[in-house]
Length: 439
Ligand code: IFM
Image 1: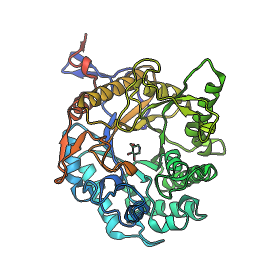
Image 2: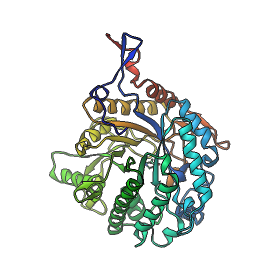
Image 3: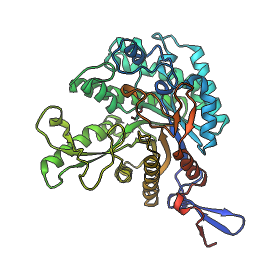
């Protein structure tokens, strides 16, 4: 992934078949195709984490419980991914399992993740590994979580252990997942641990801490392996003003974009150098922002959810707009950072198969269009492989390429899984399948 793509691969690679036929591809052979998951959402019984403690204490509306039993079923899950054309897989390691007590690592948990990584390699699935995906060890949360003075040092200590024990099996790293999302839910909306409301100052400090933790972990991972490829997964919606002719809406959108999207890029610099080897984008939706002089919206602007704003809009189960054009715009916009790009998450919460199919095709087309215009996109990870524990929404949001059968937890592939497989195997968009260029 980190070799610069050739001009041919950027513009739609061409492949020799036999001696004469040349087949056009929209995506090169080494493009990463996979699904993304996170430990707490799929593994089950994550007992030493802050989320588990909050669930047990009745502070969250849903419990994760056995989740999807991925802890035991990971091999079958990776078989499924491989059978449907995936060549990569994004997962997270659970810090709370690996370090259930401060400074005391659990060797059985390390052995488990070593087996998980071998299982991926055995199936030729490239692992992309997140070190921190929203959950914290309960002991750290009790000391203040990301706001504890020791938080960054603790994260570095954990990262060093992971690099030492598992680093040989990992090339692509994501240090932290979506710092702005965690700060918003944990310290502004207050529906996630630690359930603090309207503390913008703390939210800002959490973001700054997580960015500092990223910088430190970046150095650690490179010290262990000069070839490591390190990034963090950033939530990057497309943000635009609701009434572009009104300066207040333009200003609200600009402030939102700065705080939500661009601030982390400033905080991830050291001596002017941006400590990212690639840009990992979680893209779901666009935000149409209007100025509103009240409450939270004063700072961030209010979301315009008018279903007829600029044509008929479609929203998923979580109220996120389905807008593939936004992925294209985000890619064109952030190409200016000059980094290779991986879409580390993209997906939709729905049980409507047609909508999921359309969503997938629309977003993959947006990717292909951006690539054809020279944007260096190297991979696409669908959120997610099968329906799982969607944080405070429990199991009520359906993001999976496969559904979970209640009770048995059997994975039932949805039609989109087959569409994904065809694109991943052929490197071509469906309407172009069978197209042959002249020799
Ligand atoms: O489920 C989450 C994931 O944990 C982080 N990014 C967004 C997903 C869907 O809401």
